[in-house]
Length: 502
Image 1 (tube, rainbow, N blue to C red):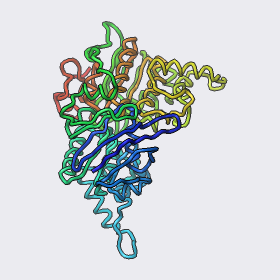
Image 2: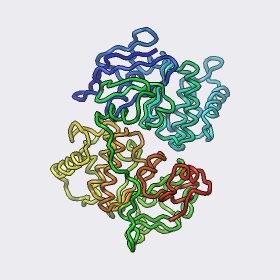
Image 3: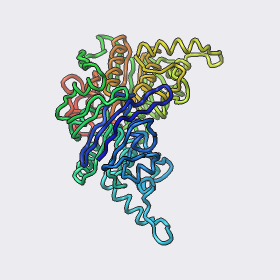
Image 4: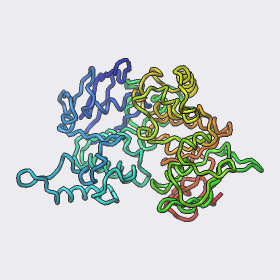
């Protein structure tokens, strides 16, 4: 159905694709894999009509084609969902789903009744539980992601491209999506999925194509490639067989907790949260999306104003007026939504790394370029951040290296407490392992980390203990032999038997 041969693309001195090639057959699901910066996004943008290649050939249904715009892509029956979403935040769910497919009546006037019926049918298909008139910007990321996918499926594509479609979804939503993809496959629709959740390719994909440094390194049936082989082709290195991150516990006899939270409450979000965290441990924060995890982390940071309860840090009661006060007290924060909350895309890499240190400086003192450069250069080397130059805009980096810039920003400050809100969302397996390694090294030196993640496997792999949130309450604290996927899922659903509290 689709064949791309010898696709090359450079952005100035940065080579994104080097004669890359992929093939997709009718009615198959193919995984497009590679580390961050391998060229996956650029290849997808070529098919979406957002990037014109420097050279190469695209054959589609037996014909050589030239995709010069997104309109060309849509007219060919190619639909792409993007990780950063193509939704219009200030428009309703209905208007977003029907956009470009609005049913019309007399004199070309939009038939609002039919438009609403059309949108509601896809909301039902994808179990989107919100008002059809709700503004997209008011919805949770997982709901926005489902709307993005529903909009794409509603266009009746011949080739559907999913770019990190499951990054914001939880297990039940992923199951639903996979059922729909199997239906589309049975109808003859071809699907390309870009994902960093490796277990998903074995559940849903027929074949995979792996890119590294802009080149296609291998392609074949997923049944013929185990995870170690996939990781090797993605990174060029054999998977690290380092000791497991689990089984450690930072608490020492007689030592007081670094962080103590008592009866924390916020109307509609948090209800009597009790939590302790000691130096040297990674405390997991689990739960379905929107159960209070974000509000909890941001309450500690001073970004959300809680109404009841107390927070003690180093045995001192705290209630920061703003996040800058938390940073001055040696608390760091890493968000998984780097585009909105972490990265300054048009500013240099050096300034992005130094941004955290600014909170420790006197705002009225001049800042020499040498200070910024030396600070950021040390972080780049220590945390293996791949940059073309410290003076380049952060937007020039791959998603994984942008996130490593944020990691480096805070690790270079050696915080006592680090708050992480889904920090590995949308990064490749190699970068994820590297972030885990960095956290392990820092906690072994005495730092404490509160680690919220939407990935259950990640929580179980990295956390010493896991507090599970459900409807603003902690339903379980899983530790030791209670740290199992079954108990974690049960606690996430508010079921009993999830484990004790601590």
